[in-house]
Length: 150
Length: 266
Image (cartoon, rainbow over all chains, first blue to last red):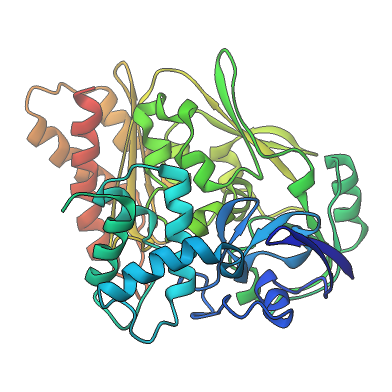
């Protein structure tokens, strides 16, 4: 089936099957920041924004995105660079596989919440898993990005 | 992995129902969180995203939640925060992550009647009704144990009857499913006790509710202990990989005590 998705502000045509998930359609089209890390719908690596809200692209049927706005990490490069630098400064980037999903959710959190406490941050990011770190370095970076006092 | 031959997004429930009934293996899609982990062979996947079912409306005597409303919308709803002690927002706030809750829908989880649901147990403790396209309005307590029939859940209706509500659960980690959960609601001296994640579907505990509704609360320790004994007697707990029946029963007693104390001081 032919669908149109507005990816990072640009309307594009996609040929997909009725049972394709958005994750696979985006990756096939070259948006390699979107990754699948768990196959059980809970790791957060495949996070994209759907109509401005962070969602798991692995469980969103591609056809549902027809004529809708989807944003991937490639569409928020400048903001991602700011937060990505903070991750590096805190030594949080180890294998880096989970970083795109985390960055998408962190930027979404800042847009949605504005001001946040450490509790708000932990709650919002509970669905972003990392198997390298103990989350402390990411948390330091996120707190700096959100302007939370130590 | 599931398969689907066609994908449609009807604009109305009438259109959706006709499509649903057209073939045995035509299915309504909910949030689709676990769709790809299943092996369902779907002929036509019917997506209700365009059918106007994403809403939370407050009327004079009730709150209506559309079937395609996401859990995240429920969690952040200003309407729901001021009713039932905000429990309906809080009870689902720890399910996996924000992205997941932006995906999962109220209709998907209620229609499926999952045993591990954090949402169904507190809803069952309130005066909640489901609105089915064909069958009409039926109490959630009846719907819970009906056989699965082909119909479309359009919305749920929760009566605003000033019930105080408490939801208690035990989970292994912050974003995990509950091992067992308990909801208690109270209006005046009328208590309603519900137990979920047994791990089977949530049930009401009528004898426990009756006892709490007609007892003197002078000694809350002995009242909650007795209520726990009645609940353990009337509710069937089971064993699965997460916990044994005995463990669930023991934990449920403590959760019941906490819930009764919480609504008791409201």
